[in-house]
Image (cartoon, rainbow, N blue to C red; front, top):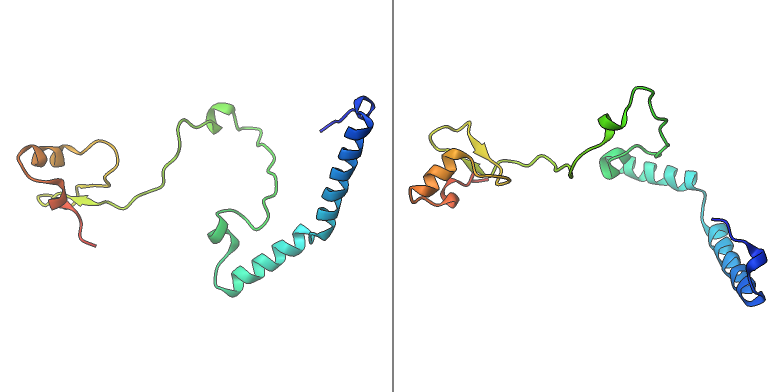
Length: 126
């Protein structure tokens, strides 16, 4: 963020200085990130977790250098990635056929619904 102080009026400059002093005071009160990171890691370990289990990443999000082989086509993703979901419906005729309830209904379920049955009849009991 580059601010040209030569173009600021005396009032604007005073406001900027006050804002900078407030920010500086806030930053001085904070503990170093390494100290906080160590405390969080120790607390997670004491409770039987790892930081990656709790937050989905490593203990310290260090910036990764781009690999020379990676190309934009490999790293670009279309749409959003949804997590894996347990199946909610099961075909009584073939237990291997299941459906999570996402996307288009499978043919076996659509046929059963067309024949007058309800999709709720095929819910997997947990």
